[in-house]
Image (cartoon, rainbow, N blue to C red; front, side):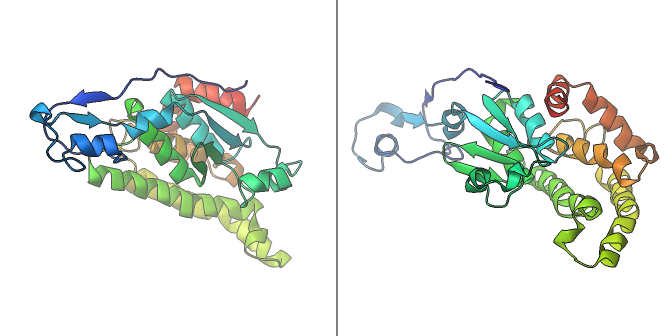
Length: 267
């Protein structure tokens, strides 16, 4: 099976004393009993509490990433490689129109990639998939969970890549999403170099912390930026114009997870 990764699984553990329930925990009857909710008179010394880690349970499940080469799905593939989670990949051929096949449309009616199949359903959209990967692989430390402001900054950066940078890039080859007239399509293509350069000027000067997107710590924003930077030459923009972003791209190329993902992407 191609693209498979395996991870160890740690059992949930008991904890003594009060404390907050972990994010994603489930109130089972047993847990409620230990909390003194279902059976408040239950004689349990020091109110022993079962700590149920939903994330670790989730991470045992095989994930399947539907993927196409040279697309934004590369960011999700890199994140999976970084995470240590078990997963498999299924590569689609856009040139053969496989993203519009009846079988794939049952998985993702949008007809786009990435799509991540989990035991609870299918996730689409890169920011959502990246966040899910980070949540179920906390040991990989791909997101600043526990720091609400830093988490919001990360989401803000990735949202900008998704809603603005990617859309500007798409005007070069996907202009038919927005217009039908040949003149309008050509006008959109002509604006791509300027629009992409404007986006990366903002990233370079105002948004990028360095040496990684968020500063000293690698995060979900790094593979996503890496993908967008990789598109600049085809969009008519010289990446060398952006020293910090270019340095980031070179640093990303040294990461084993990125090298594995690229080998699959370009193989």
